[in-house]
Amino acid sequence: MKQPGRITIMGGGSWATALAKIVLTSENSINWYMRRPDRIEEFKLLGHNPCYISSITFDTDKIHFYSNINEAIRDSDTLIFATPSPFLKQHLKKVKTSLRDKFIVSAIKGLVPDENMLITDYFVQYYGVPEENIAVIGGPCHAEEIAMERLSYLTLACSNTGNIRLLSDVFRNHYLKNIVSRDVAGIEYASVLKNVYAIVAGICHGMKYGDNFQAVFLCNAVQEMRRFVEAACHVERDITDSVYMGDLLVTSNSRFSRNRIFGAMIGKGYSVKSAQLEMEMIAEGYYGVKCIYEINRRYQVQMPVLNALYGILYEKKSPVAVIRKLTETFK
Image 1 (cartoon, helix red, strand yellow):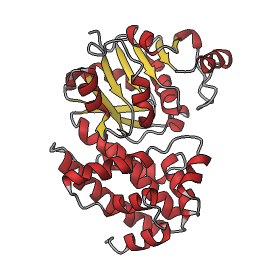
Image 2: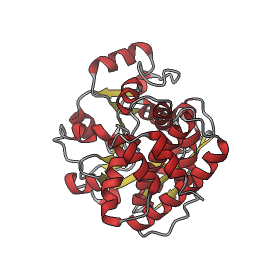
Image 3: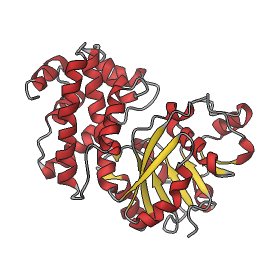
């Protein structure tokens, strides 16, 4: 396997668009899979993604577009997946081409719903990809700030750090820095949990809880994250590193955070369903809270914030009553 070789972006959303911009900074050309041919034609005509981050313009002569997932895989060495986690299974069901000799990079900050599996585990178990040929991208890095070329930091994780180091130059330029890690599972779980906590931060913001409370909430959230990640995967880590706590802070506080926006709508009185309908993009924390809640039946970690949000989203409990009770557990 050549690595990174020919790189393909898998997905057509805002994060996929930002990743394409990053990769084209160092690579002469990329492959790009989008499932809808009409979107591809519009992209070619406009020179930018017609639906997401339209401020990023592309030289489309450097992009080989695909609407056939098997053709995209066949013509690639490294596949960077940036599809929303709820739709990953649906996309992969179309795959007839072997993924075993590809290098897979997951930029998906979610789990596989129903399966309650990490993205990397799903590729290993169902598609036979060797563990050392799978990596994850994590860290506080909003697509909108990549578009503006604001200084950002990523963490690249793989069980074989030698493999990911070969790819690290692709994710390093004048506005982007990166570090390498071996904590694949820990970073994946933290990436899910930060979305969960961002929804709660949004709910509290919508209910007019102030900055003083939000600071206390985030201190408790990061400790809850630490408890779960340590129980789920025993790897030495510092939970205050940017890929864990940094991603939690930016997702809970940023105006670009769709999970925070989703939560704020609920805090202002929207029903869960109406908030989802009004959102133009998916808040992955909605799916993540159910997955982690069910996974935690195995680990039995003390997770009052997760349990509170599960009650609001899936048991239709009153956000006002649930959050008021939750505040009594904080210190």
